[in-house]
Length: 570
Image (cartoon, rainbow, N blue to C red):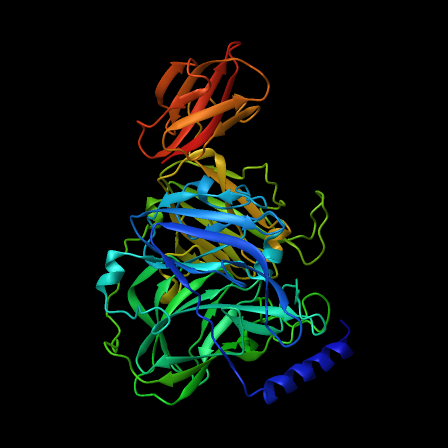
C-alpha cells in the first residue's frame, strides 16, 4: 500500500470512528460443562459488517466456540469433529497433559474425522483456551475465528469471595483485531488488523453491575500486543496470570495504570464499579506509548504490516454500568493462593534458547528480513530439539538478539519467571505462566518442572505465539523422558500401526511389511518391562490391568528385529 492510499484510508477510518455513535452488544460465548465435550469445527458465515457475510470458522457456532468449564481432578473427554475443508488441530493451550493429547502439529484431524483426546485435569483454576495449531496454517485458521475459552475451577478458587457468575460479573474477553476488505467484506490474512473485535463483536458494548467485576482477558490476536487501561485511568487489580491465581492480588494504579498483554497471554483482573450506575467507561489500548519493537507499537505506512491501529490509542470495549446485583462482591480478598514456586537452586539444568532475526541464515529456505528464528534454525517437524528427563526442574534462559519482541510459549508446563535482564519481574508477573513476552535484546529466565508424562516419541512444542512467526518456522519441539534401556537403536515407528490409542483395554497392532511378530513387551517410561508374552493372540495384547499412564509397546519379529510405539492407557 502506498503512502497516499494509506493516509486516505487512515482519514476514512478516523471519520467513521468519530461519526459512529452506535455500538453492538458484546457476544458472550455459550458454555459447556461436565466431563464429556463435543465440539465441531466448521466453515461458516457471520454478518460482521453490512453487505456480504464474512466467511468464518467456529466450533459449534459461526465464530469462536463455547466456553468449556472443567474441574481440577476430573478426567475430561473431548470429541473434536472436523467439518472444515482443511485439516486442523486443536491445542489445549496451557493444559498439562500427555503430548499425544496436546493438539500440536502432530495431532492432525483430517476433514470428516473425529479426534477424541482425554486427560486428567491437574491445572490450577485459571483461564485457558483452545485453538488450531496446524503447522503453517495457524494464522489462517485463527484469523477465520477458530478458538474458545477453557476455564478450570478448583476448590481453592471456589473458597474465595470472587465474582464468578458467568456473563454477569465474570466476563470473558477475547481481544483481537482483523483487517476486513471494504469490498468483499472478507477477512484479510495479515498480521495486523484495522478493526478491534471482542468475542467476535465489532464496536462492542456491555452492561456491568455497579460492583466488583472480574474480566478474563485473552489476547487472541495474530500479532498485536495491547497496552490495556481504562479511559478514566482507574486502577484495577490483577488476580490471575496464565496458569493460576497469584498469592496476593496486585493493584495496578497511578496516574496511568496500564497492563501490557501479548498474543496468547491471559490475565484476570478485578474492576470496582461500585456506586457508578449510569456511567460509562472504555477499556482501551494505549498503544501509542509502546516502542516500535513491540507488536502494536510499530508503525508502517505501507506493506503487509500496515494498520490504522498501529501505534495508536483506541477503544476496545464500552462498559455501561447498571444496577448492582444481589450477593454482589464489593471487596477484594487480601490473599488468593498459597503457591510454592520453584527457585533457581532447585534446577538441575539450564537450557539457553536463542531468538534472533533471520539475517545470515544460509540453510534453505532463505528467509526475508522480517522473519525470525529460534536457536538459529527453522522448525523441522522431524527434528527434536531437546530431550528433557522426566521430573527435571529446569531453568530456560530465553535470550533474544532480535530487533523485535516475541511472546514465547511452551507447551506442557506452567513456569514462573525468575528474572528479566537479571531483575525480578514485576509483582503482577510473579505467578504461573505459559507465555512470556521477550522484548528486543532481552534475556528472560524461567523455571519449570517437567513431571507426570513421559514419551520420547511424541513431542511438545515451544514457539513464538505470533501466528505468522510460528507459521514461518519460529518453533521447536521437545520430548520428556529418556528412552527405556535397549530401545534407542531400534526401528521405532517403521511399518508398525497400533490401535486404538489411547486405549482402556486391548491394543491391536499391524505390521505393513508382512513380518511375523514373535514377542510382545510392554515397557514403562522408566525402562521396566511390565509384560512379556509370545504373540499367540492374533496381534493383540490385553493391557487392562495396567494403571493409567504412558507406556511403550515393543514388538520383536522372528528375525530379532524390534519395533516400538508409545501409547496411552486410560
